[in-house]
Image (cartoon, rainbow, N blue to C red; front, top):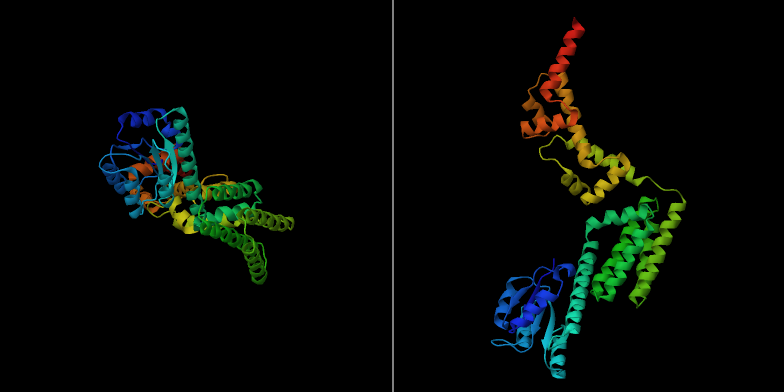
Length: 359
């Protein structure tokens, strides 16, 4: 949830905003409140604010002075100024301070609606900015790669729509350039997996980067990349799809088989090892095996435990430790839940069968 700060020496204004703005629906926590610039400065410098709604005229410290001091501290919150004056000099000074908007007093319904629209736009901009930053992280590579491999046009079109929307919200130009390069680099990984030579992949990468370097408009760059990437993927799929997920899951299963007995071994360890998000890891695993990763780990533990219960005379504590359980009671309850019988019950039953067979 985003954080907002209302700064106004008029308590009626603060109450009006708190009661009439649907903060939670817009993605905000209950707003902070200050009745002068000094208190607002203390709040904003000790809490990471996303939006500050600030009156221009206040005791102790006025709105513009507050904003100047916050900008000096590199506070990047969006600022919305409240003023009873349509003063061009204030607006001009606000340009340098990167004021997001000006709202006129006295407050009327249109002012409340305009503030709601501003808050919604700021929330959308922040969400898109965070999404763009996430897209650049390595853990996003596998999701993009899977979309390429499965020729998931809806997913890829959604990616391009979000990038386009991000540009409309003035997300940093250089950040978007990194996104374009990221898409091209993941495409190159895909082409290598599809059997293209290193030279061919390098030539394609150089060609794409050169081309987008000659285009001035971001919308044109997006349209060009979208067309080229989808075209590359469509053509490679016409040659026949490789079952990449099956190959990945085979490697994942091998890793699990070698490590499932380690204490506290979980999907997080596998996620770190293969650089997948947990959700993505479960998706591709379940698409091949029909079960989740956690259930597969439990199956391995339980099948091994059953073998040890039936075929050895090891104590149940030893067996629990051997299959990765620190707690005997937790092992016993897990075993019973899986096999509908306790370890001692299974061992006794098996011994009875052996005695009957000998007789």
